[in-house]
Image 1 (cartoon, rainbow, N blue to C red):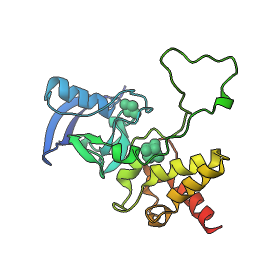
Image 2 (image 1 turned 135 degrees about the horizontal axis):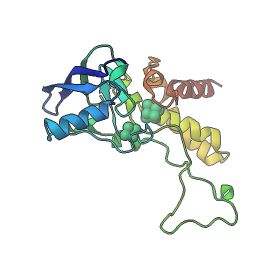
Image 3 (image 1 turned 90 degrees about the horizontal axis):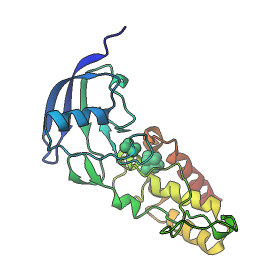
Length: 223
Ligand code: SF4
Ligand code: FES
């Protein structure tokens, strides 16, 4: 049987821009989150990172691992041939602490109207106590990877918000909403600000393909 244990050198970028380096033996079947947990529990309790679901659905653990945006809970040590691993926070967002960034600048631009319409609820359904409304399930887990990878850093609403606008446009038949959504997409910082680098689609962990949504909006604008 293959020896699963390797000696890894893991560098973590801290909020003071310095990199902390840790050398430790780890099973290559572990994820990056597992490795961070090992470091925090056994070597340095001060490093900060974020995670919640551990199965690629909450988006909170996104960071840059060996130069590419990835979900730390879905990235395995065995994904890399090299045992030197560098973990950095996402670009384009304000750093709260070490690997933890504030994604509210993206969230505030997302279309948040993806609620189930009353007409889609079963007539006999009763909302559980404390639940005011339901969110429609979407592929986007709002991890921020696409925004981080996009080289257009200013005067651009960003890939995930544009994808959310296109999704809403495909759902709604309400003239007023369509006008509003098109207004946002076709503003100066909308589709025209995209430089077509397509990195957003390359890094998206849930195959939202934001660049495709942006392209759809572009075609709609040219109609
Ligand atoms: S579009 Fe993809 S990369 Fe961008 S925030 Fe949503 S899930 Fe993350
Ligand atoms: S911890 Fe939820 S996506 Fe990684």
